[in-house]
Image (cartoon, rainbow, N blue to C red; front, side):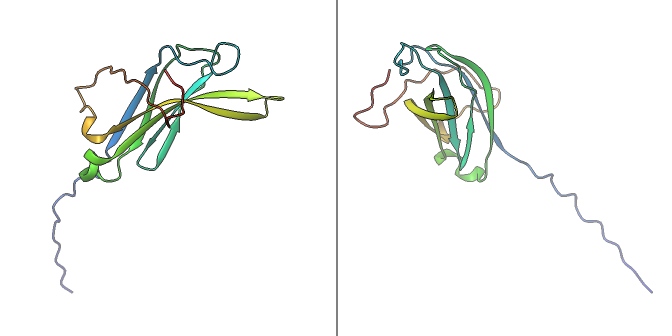
Length: 137
């Protein structure tokens, strides 16, 4: 019996590219609870993946300092990928078992606007309306 062995070139490790969104804070949010306050949280949607921050109860100037991590499915199309960030008010009602979430504003960014590793910085974005009838600040 004759055998032959051939050494294959080493395969590169599977590289997983990630986008990390650090939700730091918000300032001067609109009160939505009827008592001059809001209980905001943030939902970040990227490439079909949604992640949510914790809720900051009764705080118009919330501080989250939460990093949300997303996997990039197609690095070649990164420049046109959309990242949508929505700020909502978590309004508990009744006995606390139900929720009504109210829109406070949103920000949309594209992959071409993302900072590369080592070039990160703190950037504040103004919140946009969902429709012409939305009231935000």
